[in-house]
Image (cartoon, rainbow, N blue to C red):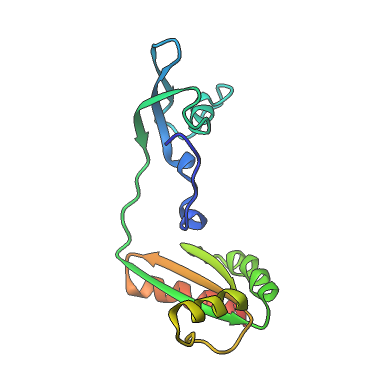
Length: 158
């Protein structure tokens, strides 16, 4: 809680900092302080909560955290989409996001990574075509929702 990790799902869910509402922290004077609020919006000046989160334990010891939670999606799907070049793969992502699709994950891979994968696993990669790839992940509560997101994303890359 005392850093700002993003992780693979930051595309859809954001980084940890965005989900922390309140912190209780023991500072160097030995006193317990509370930073943040249960409300999302605050215009009361500098965010000491965010300063503590990014401090990596150099400013105090976090003793309690109040976080925003999400319901867990029940369905997920991944798609590997090949492109002629890695640059083409990278350029496709803004178009996908502009279409309104919000993937859970977006990863890029070039042919060099695929070649290393083939060597490590001593087998052929399942996709022959392409020198650049994006691996998209989607999650939702129904099969229909994840399929619709995937279909729209793939159509955007054509």
